[in-house]
Image (cartoon, rainbow, N blue to C red; front, side, top):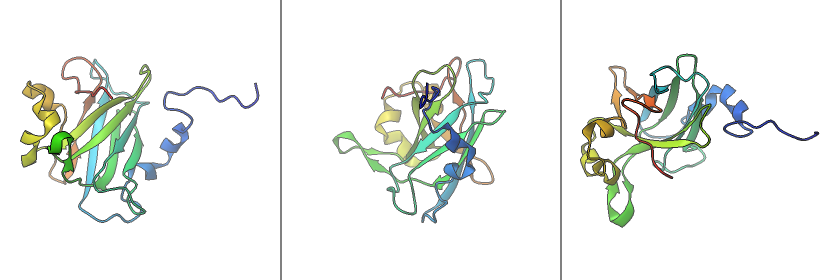
Length: 173
């Protein structure tokens, strides 16, 4: 059938993952504190998901000509993904409750019929305790699945577990 495109989990733009520039949200010269976010996408048995896609969005700083506010990273053979971005600030939330600085992640992988969405917060951020979403999670172990930790080089790390023990908290959006 002419004009028919084969179905793909994340639509017709899978080829954009081949360009590593999509994972660098600072590539147009954005101003602000530059950070790196790295991690692994893991299945329920803690095995790497080698053919996944992680999308990153952030509302702060606002998208502009120098900052797209959106990026994509393919996972490698070890399930690793990596982004360069600008550290976000606090955001207004429902009922004038301020949200702690965070990044939003969308996860696409084989076997998922729709994307999974989670957030990444920063370890040591004093406003995490008052963030409405984090405060809604009673179990500290569940909250911890959304907290990235910095290494000595300044890269923030978080692993995304799709299911099983230490499953990442996913949001119903």
